[in-house]
Length: 409
Image 1 (cartoon, rainbow, N blue to C red):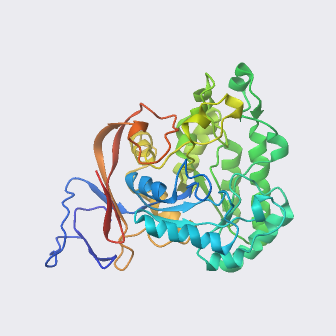
Image 2: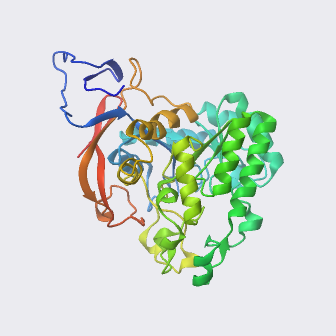
């Protein structure tokens, strides 16, 4: 619905929407005239670092950063220390998320024990404990037989298998995209083929098993086209685009800028344009930040020694409103679909809608608010971003989870 109206939230659920509604006696009234009310935004790819690396991020700080960025729910990756590969640890993440009282936190479980890629983790038990997907994110499943087992097993529980597409034999010790910039810098590169080969493998195994493969942070033009063709064949695949792969190229790494070092790496402008087109035509279903906090000292190391990843929860909305909607790639309703409706569908989560009876998870956007990305103001414990100093227009100003305001600027 694209109209002016009211929204009534009662007891954690949407009670009425549209037109002029009478507020019940004692209700809290929030005037958001001139702003946009959307179903709560959902990020299906975040790293919250707890347990084990709480100096980078905690579940509580990550959930608060998500709320500050307009996200009412996030899906947490399992590559912590220890790895989330047991029902007890899945339950721990879920419990910590509830204690944060900010954005909802949905845990995932590892595909393989210890992310070693050798033996399946107890997928069924982890799902019963609250896992909404399984993934070895950051550790691609190289064994096709293991991927087959994971897809077949997860299919029985109706959850996706999310995979980081990278053939480690081809990427070797690469530190950035293999191309002109890596040659100029003298840095070992990761070729597109390392991603492309793995995407094709995952698509074929998903087609063979009938399982649901979710491809994370797609960055290559061939990969986008392979997913497009697989969807046309009826393969059960969903895929995500990350803001940094939509807006940046490997030129951002020039000068050995570790804040632009990530995996998959920033690629060529032709790849960036293909990812943007994949987002536009729906080949890439969701926008996901791959929020990856790192301590300042870690990112200050020599380029080859610095870790991959950037924070993204607090910049995604502004970047997308300014450089995707603002430049006519997507209209606002389609952006909401990619950041709320489709993430909920892909991971079978509550939310993604404001129909009566749905969860009272709401994001309010001010489309005209000008602001400058200032890492010092981040709610996240980490500040590693290549977008510092970018001038943006549009941001989330109110975030409501379960009918409770958890963030208001």
